[in-house]
Length: 462
Ligand code: UDX
Ligand code: ADP
Image 1 (cartoon, rainbow, N blue to C red):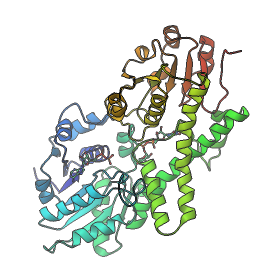
Image 2 (image 1 turned 120 degrees about the vertical axis):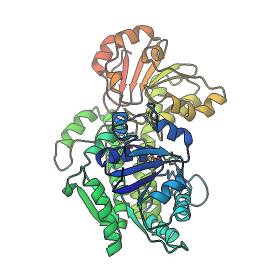
Image 3 (image 1 turned 135 degrees about the vertical axis):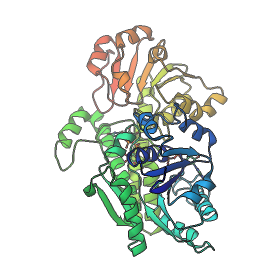
Image 4 (image 1 turned 180 degrees about the horizontal axis):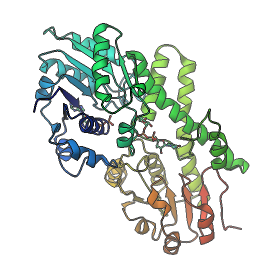
């Protein structure tokens, strides 16, 4: 079959995989190929055991796989055949050298740009999909334009706004699609080519076109604003615990103001995920590099509050369990950074587990999807002999435990038989609800000592 255009996506991860699956499903006239250096990942995309857990994703993949959606490790052939190349390789925070702990590590991106130059024989549109520091497009343009073959590459920024756990829905019904390009005739034509793809299923008024730098910066700012809301309500949760106010009631009252809105106001043990911290660090780094220290400090405080919230939760556990957790069995319900994903990148669970293990607690980690990742995250502790068990069944995880700490807001935890769990635990039994998802009064009546976040605790101690 002859396709209208060939789309290539380099990087088959949490962003590239779902995005291309939806594009292929919605645009049968385009041939979509997804390539990755990781052969195991590519094999998994070609099977019924996808490499990432994402509700509804397998159905979408199956609609298009073998028709106009293909997975491959042949990056060179993919580049040669492509008209449009989406780049969604990983851009983690640098762990070394200049900007370590702040700036993005662009080595994978740059390697990809060189590969594109090496294997291209004709003009192509290059689409930045990975989250990148502002003005990365410019650096990419320089690498691409340096080619000796006289090939024209137009760089377009199309930042991804999907959230894990709801990626398919977010892609099918996006609040907006953002496409940034040079405001030259060639740049605008490239942007139109990308608009044409999304116009297959997204209403025209939801497709926003801007200049390149606005698109790149919008992604960082959108994530910074979302993270800021969580840090704001988490800061209030600490104040609630001191004053007797209830953070849930405050979220509702404050969120009822339509100017503020009700979403993203759930107090928690802190935000995780691959984007929020990295994007804010990028914002802080570029602000500082332009000498805007007040701006940098302002956004840095969002991260500081997030770290404080995670530490506070651990301190609460230790304090309430009579100032020691040595040898005590604590079941962590959930380890993913949020519900409906197996991803644990920057999960507060990692921090909580590490701190409790340093205090020599014995941990049982339970999660419906994230145990493989949890094992990798805590491998260092296991290797040095720390007491960590992994148990998918929450009932078995809680049996014989002194305490339960809710780390992830999985729905399944709300429906557990806590009478049965209480009967199987050591006494006094503690529950620390790091997501405020349980019925605290009911737990108290069963016999638990209950410690929510930002709400009065309920204990049986005299
Ligand atoms: C985020 C953005 O939402 C998305 O638009 C962007 O493309 C990538 O980054 P993601 O990290 O997948 O998506 O998940 P998100 O739903 O934003 O949650 C991030 C973290 O905030 C999670 O740890 C979540 O548990 C936490 N959170 C969210 C809260 O603690 N309270 C809330 O009210 C909402
Ligand atoms: P994200 O959450 O941004 O999608 P992931 O880490 O899930 O990040 O996915 C990025 C993918 O990019 C990984 O599967 C990785 O193997 C792939 N990758 C990194 N560098 C290259 C490269 N030069 N060529 C092809 N794939 C790459």
